[in-house]
Image (cartoon, rainbow, N blue to C red):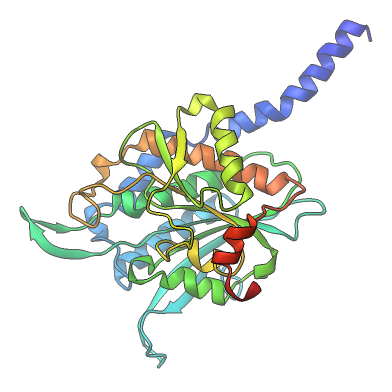
Amino acid sequence: MTPSRTLSFLLVLALAPLGAARAQVERITPELMATHIGVLAHDSMRGRATPSPEIEEAAGYVEGVFRRIGLEPGGEQGTFRQRFPVTRDSAPGAPTGPNVAGILRGRGPLADEFVMLVAHMDHTGVGRPVNGDSIRNGADDNASGTAGVLAIAEAFALGQRPAGRSMLFLVVSGEERGLLGSRWFAAHPTVPLDRIVGLINLDMISRNRPDTVLLNGWGKSSLSTLVQRLAVEHAELGLSVGPDLEDRPVTPADSDHWPFQHRGVPYIFFYTGAHPDYHNVGDEPQRADAGKASRIARLAWHTLDLMATDAQRPAWEAEARRLNVPGGF
């Protein structure tokens, strides 16, 4: 082979993984995000309260996607589901809520470790009518984050992944009632908790300025630095990242990363800020910016990809760990 052909051959080999990654991440489209948001936040879902027939329907939709793309069940007893109590009543027939979990197995020496992507699928149900509308659809909060989990899982599952850690895709309910589903999963994990090396939480990713995403967990772990770097490297996404001003040095228990970071798992939480439709009837699918949500999901895809393949585990900043991980977990 001539030197010029050798150089061309090596260039093709070097660019092949980049091309494969580009093909995978480009599966995350505004159209796909809009479809998932539209189903989950449709009026027929009646706001997906926990418990309700509609949150069970939402769980069935999530499980159907996980099955279709070939994820391994990550729930209890070989299923995709995990049930948790909604009240303190543990008697038979007491109300419960659903979590849905799917696993994409890694390959190689890191495959027994996990990186996790989590979002909540529930909302606040039906309330007092406003101009004849009583359904609090929860399109941004949090059909948008759930759509992100589904789209990212599909992009990974239907593509060619390099060797790396396994991926746990977790969609919970009961968040609006005090993180019930994520608290339960963290206390009753279906994979060893000490093998979950880091997580991304997606909650409310489809509103406000189209070029901005906020990071809860800013400066608290290496994941914060990683996302900032990836936003620069992937300028095509048109996203600038900044700190979530609602965050505190001691992380508030305000979304589903909290039960896990409280047990020592480094996290980053993608969020686009509050708006007047928050927990109101105006949080409808047509007001969700599916284009913005798809670009944030692509940034999360790049983040999860590197979390899975980097030999180094995500690491807490020392002071953040001291403040946020009680008991030395």
